[in-house]
Image (cartoon, rainbow over all chains, first blue to last red; front, side):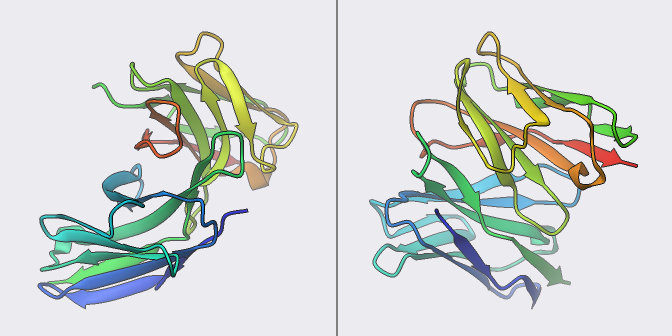
Length: 114
Length: 115
């Protein structure tokens, strides 16, 4: 089945620096890759997603890149702020079931130090 | 609030008791998902519904777990004879459409503690 690996598990940056989180996936049929941000005790919230027909997508300080050949995708956060501190999860959809579902990575705990 | 809502938000139960969680999806969404999340892990897929039909179940969903969505709107997740290993946050989510590539929106989750 689909497997999503996420690195690093923890990431600490200074405010204003950039942060990069990387994920790899195994199912070449996957074509949808969302990123979720989860603050302590809260629900995962979608921050950006990318589909396989594009290689890059940007939304203000957040960008995601996708390399389908290598089966990896990355989240880039520029000009980090303390409120960016949270756990970030990547995911890939999986067609192994009848209609598929999202398989999540184990998460990256991002800490932005003022 | 037009988001996904879950009830109760927190539940503490004794081992061996049954618990039931309810999820109300976003009103126009026809897909409804249940995920489980433990500390330090990403959400793990349990099952999903397309309208009232339960189309897929994870191997994580043992026979003590049952989910229903009788009218294609709200859903319930029941855990029978709870075990300490069932302690987790149970997340409900919903999406529109027929495909797995549509955006999934999560509820705030139902925290279960089995003592």
